[in-house]
Amino acid sequence: MGHSIVKYQSAPIPHRERWVELWVGLLGVWVELLIGVLVATPAWAMAPSQQPAETITIHLGTAAGNLRFEPDHLTFIAGQRYTLVLDNPSPEKHYFTAKDFADALWTQNVKAGNVEVKGAIYELELKPEAVALWTFIPQKPGTYELHCSIPGHAEAGMVGQMTVQAPA
Ligand SMILES: [Cu+2]
Image 1 (cartoon, rainbow, N blue to C red):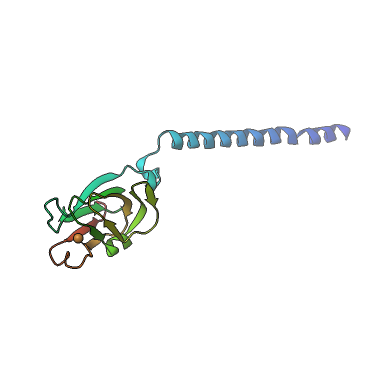
Image 2: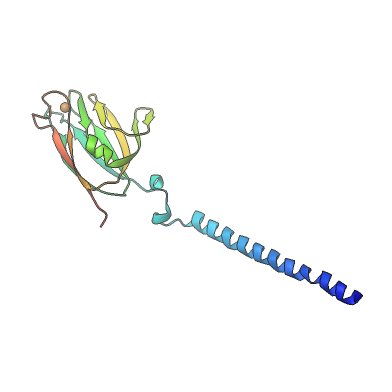
């Protein structure tokens, strides 16, 4: 009788040790997974805001004073990160107005001077020699119009087209 009690009491100990081993083993797997993610993050696992950005430059007006965007057609791929560099080489101020385009993308930020603006951007005003960097990820494929909203400028040809393509 006494013998069987001792046996009964000693039985749970190896059982518990096995659980401890299992937990340590699981912890090891998790630590390995975590290190794997930290050391070699594939592009698909990377946060969108950390993806390398492709830089595209668009000029608002020309040095000679022509009312146009250069280039006036831009193409983007949905899901890729871009930094659009806007500058104004012309002698007068211009607007980059693209509301539908802005609605079709996620804006990470706009940097100009020492200011970084977060949140949705629909229109940027650039005075002569100004430069602004707009970083975003297009979300919705489509063709979107761009214009300068200073009276007379769009009519004179200061318009453009931006296309967002679905990823191949
Ligand atoms: Cu203009």
